Length: 205
Image 1 (cartoon, rainbow, N blue to C red):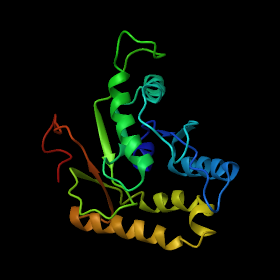
Image 2: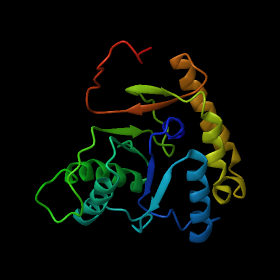
Image 3: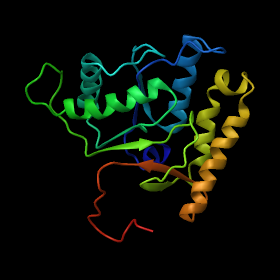
């Protein structure tokens, strides 16, 4: 996200829930932390009111997300990987894929003009340890410290809760993928659709 924002590409974060309740937070604290984190990344942020811990892939929720897709009109949608220990993340995966399709429907009661993002790209979970095989890596060598700064904005979740080692582990993982990609740090992604290079081999390393 930070890499895209630095290149002047608009980025919008769509939180389906506010992430509460948690042992160390409140809705007010989490709201302030999430806004600060988005500012660090250079992204816009919208937080919806779907229930945390009870997120479901429903027609209503698909339409609500589709209306946000139509409003922002993104080229790409990023969503959680399908396999995760957190049920909300699994539901968010299904909702994102379905909402992308719903957003293109020409005869519907969904607000806004039809829009069909080119790809849904999936990022990997932290709640389950997978031996993953990503479709591609994104070089984040220039922004990995900004990523760490953005995570540290969630003081209630990682600093005050005594889980600061989690942040260190995230950065270590990015360095591991950087080693795999021959750079300082990288982010792994998965996509179901076959990638297309319009001008090969530029951008391919």
